[in-house]
Amino acid sequence: MFYYFGIALFVVGQCHGQDAEKVASAPYSVCELRTHGFYNLPQMSRALSTGSVSDAGAAFRQDFRDLCTDVNSKKYRTFDGSCNHPKNWGTSFKPLARMLPAEYDNGVSSPRRRGSLGTPLPSPRAISRFVHPSTPDLISRTIMIMQWGQWLDHDLSVSPVASEVNRVIKCCGPNGTRPVYPIDPNCFPIILPSDEENFAGQCMEFVRSSPALDKNNCTLRPREQINVLNSFVDASQVYGSTDELAARLRVEGDFLLKTKDEIFLPEDVASACIKRPGTNDYCFLAGDVRVNEHASLGAMHTIWLRAHNKIAKQLRALRPKDSNEEIFQLTRKIIGALQQVITYNEWLPIILGKHATTQKLPSKTGRTQRLLSADPRILNEFSTAALRFGHSFIPDVFPIGDRRVPLRQLFNRPAEVLDNFDDLVAGITGVAGGKSAQKIDRNFVVEITNHLFEPPTGSPGRGLDLIALNIQRSRDHGIPPYTAYRAACGLRPLTGFDDVDGLGPNVAQLARVYRSIDDIDLFTGLVHEPASPGSNALVGPTLACILGTQFYNLKFGDRFFFDTNDKLIAFTDNQLKSLRNTTLAKVICSNTNIEALTNNVFSFSAKANPLVPCQQLEEEGLNLSLFA
Image 1: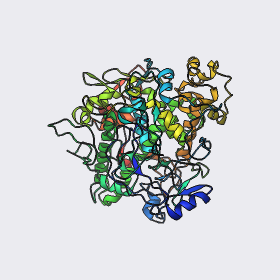
Image 2: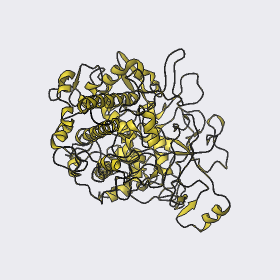
Image 3: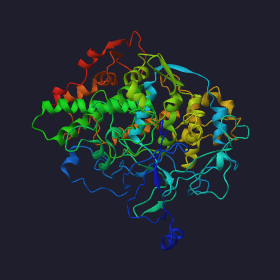
Image 4: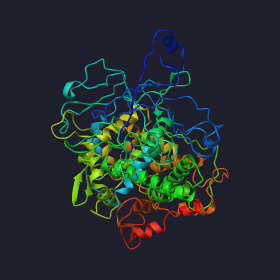
């Protein structure tokens, strides 16, 4: 999704016979009837009704891999993240970590439905409508500030929603009517307010995330959720988080990634994107299943596909004696390093301001010593609420050439990438169209609150509300309320709904829907919170705390972090200097036909950030001769 728009569909089993007896006696887990360590994934079509996407067949592993004696896994990353952390934290298909213990209604697994006073929490749709309006509020940042956040998110986490063999779970009645109880236990539908104006009916589809299992195939208690991806910043959205997917993406036996027409992503025949009749449109295949969600996301995938193949070809010429495997892995290592350079040295300092320096996140000098105390697993709060702050960046329209295209017309349409790749990139980098990102605050454009994944005119189905889905997902995952995280981050308690300093000038709107300040959902509280005075941050202190904690752990808990001091895997000093000198602008210039960019593509052209010819930026970019 835009920061978690889509979620893969997986099969959830049931307990029977002797396994059912174990349920009653297991204090911390519930056993499920499954083959140990694996799920078989059916081919499932994209379910627009739930905002889900299909996963075309990766095995669901929760066992540790025993590959760490392999020399290659010591020198280079594995695809699933194993052989990195001593406890194998951060590997794919493992439970998310938590910053605070889960708060479920029954203490074990039931979604958070009631507030601190014991009364029902407000409808997420009501919160979206009355607390998160669509008032335009632009900042002097390009759309790329949003796009890099989504790109990064798709490298870090995705949690599968529950499903059943040969049946998509439906939680609402026909035509969006209220559900008829009893309903599937995996259902947690959003009941719409009685005065709902945009959506027909009284119910919005919502299926709960699949529960994580322990090594004995028992459901963890309290309920935990799964991260299908490895958690490291390693370009897994380019290469995949499993050996099987990585093999599908690579030219067999070669050092290149598969392409179509040498410059575009390969085709995924199992995907169900929107194709224009009578054209050669096709759906993309990439390292992350959400590649087709949005045109500008597809453009990012295309840039990094081209970057891999271009770098690999140059390395082959520089290192003629190396095997194809060595060239592929070295290229992948460089691409992963560039993801970290851009994230930690360009993007995070803009988002976090001075908080980034306080958290020791930028890596512009020196080398990083891995800390065994740093847990690189993705925090549930981070993936379910905090990183979704980027939804506030999303604009209502995207400039593509001389067009200004509404966001709803770009969902699941990769044809825009095939037809208008350079114009798409020029628009999100700010060199054409002049469209800004939105400010990080409580406001969200109607394109995502009323028209998310809206089907084409004349098609069955309807749009969704991304903000309501965010709030409901946090309740599904048992995420405690916002005030609990203020306390965990060492911030002063809120005094009430009149606390303007704590929650900003629009805090009174929260009292319209919440009965208590201690009921405010984490996502809603985070985007209301103003930045600390003098922080130069785009986000408030609680959000900065959660983001900072996660990215600190991803840096210091990663054995392969790009500036590691581990001599077995470290880049040389000169290689490291060249990597640090590379910006996202230089990567884009090298892999598009755009003629000029600002060196900082997250900001518009200005005296301090002028347009620079791409030829010059490329010459100042990565010096691959240092890797010969």
